[in-house]
Image (cartoon, rainbow, N blue to C red; front, side, top):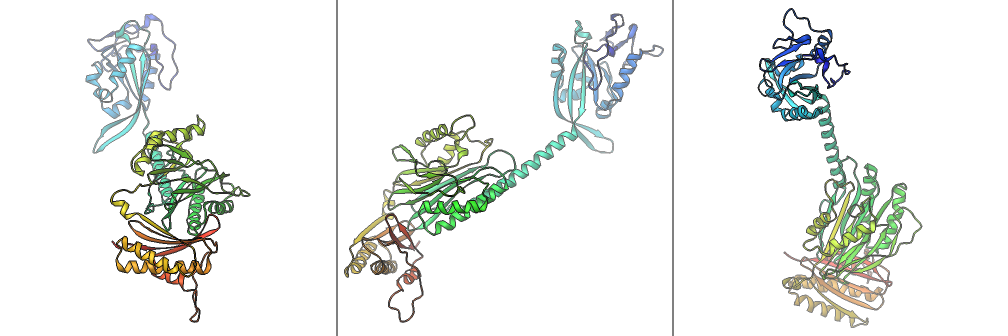
Length: 560
């Protein structure tokens, strides 16, 4: 076999100059022999018979092939009759007799799926490669070993017109170390990513608060597969008196620092929300805090409060995307103003806006990862989300999932996505008996307190509350009205509201000074009303109302 005339270049060697045609090889496929230079037949193992000296070029090629650490096998003809295997190949697969077709003599090539590839190489004269095929081989007195090899099939004498004279060189390079290193790297990246996602999720609410009057659901989809955590966050906070705060924000960038800022902002929002401040005042406080935490981090946020008694959503935004609200008929509205710059800029006076959110309506708060794409304007994404929401029905969690699918968010998405969906159900049938409201306007004067007690007694009796709860409710209403008469100004209103879980009693008036619970001295004739309410009720609170007034409320938990 004149290996020096192969047109295929040996991996790791230089192409040799072709020899004259007079020294071309000739093969006898039936006998499985290889013709040495000058027409001398070779033995079955690929070497010339004794007494015939191979050329120096042929000797050098065989020597190179035999000593290479790569697995090498050489075949000839369409049947791929084996002409040569080197020592490395023999060490892995054992000794192989030459002359027989590869399917019989080298069954491992068939198992590795290389024979169809060798057919292509033989016909086309073009090399082909398969990467990282797993190979196992026995080890004397020890368990079988395995490794990964990349196999390259190179044509030999590709220009030879006679297909019996064309061959294929199979070159197997050991890539076990590279494959194992890549697997370890992937496993390490997977663990880091899981750790990052766990960290991110631990900073988000582990379980959303479920208000009486709203149904809420949220979805967080981490972006990409790297180990960097994002700064998207959301929260649902029950404020009392049936009101609910909803917040979503986004700290730009990725990494532990962004997650740390996000965690601090979320904690601060919960603290500020307990003060029951208007949305723009909460955003104003967050703005100052953000610049103190890290002036280099850009964060956006929208804070909204839903009041079921008023059927509206009051909100304030710091550079965040608009809230979308879907009416029962499918019409979608969006918040436009007011909005301000991102948190931490300082110097901006934020204001609150309102958006109707009545029974049967659905609202969606989201971060930019849901709608922003690098190849299109962000308004295009908002429009796409608007269309998706217009046709989305079902529970809040179903709507979350549908919006993600409609906007093409998958596990391969390169940006974090947070979506918060809330629904204000339209209570009908039996639910209408559980969710009810009653109110009474009070003009002041000595008759206000008796009227309030009589009104509360009648309403609570009609709602079929137990006698003990009715008595406590009437006492609480009386004390709140008395406090308003003593320290407030008209107009005054007593409002009773029941849900499936609690009774809410609220009194509003025109004075903005909030009451405080204080310890009354034995000789004091006043100062005990709020303490009585705080003692008998499950919860109580107060807040300023638009227009300069205030509301004082308390809640009682209904018996199971």
